[in-house]
Length: 158
Image (tube, rainbow, N blue to C red):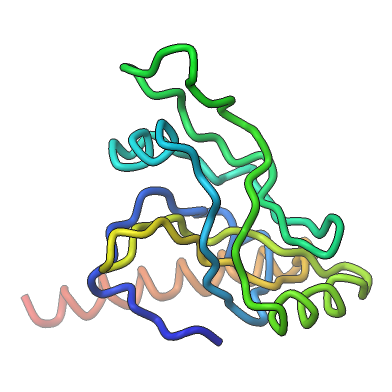
């Protein structure tokens, strides 16, 4: 949906399990409301979105369970590491997501957390459905075959 400006982006956290556990149907880019110590922690690369997800609350989208470590040089104004963080999206995107999230089995998961070319913290969200066990096995099989195929091709060329 949103333009992919990943070429000049600095990735802070990547959800590696996301594409294995879920089938991503559509991607959205959203801004995040952060405090100063959270931004400093993100710039140091101290974040994890492996267990995070996004949910709707009061006609807004919130990022839940994302872990941004406390800033080492922060004082008593330091942030809570797993606090809910509001996501910034256009009203049309929010209404579209709210409609799609009502369907059974659909969830909103963060794929990457990064700083864009202007230095703003962004999160790439995926509108996804959970994979069944047999789909996961199929994904593993395809990945292994790609790895074996690359190994065979290297053997022939070398």
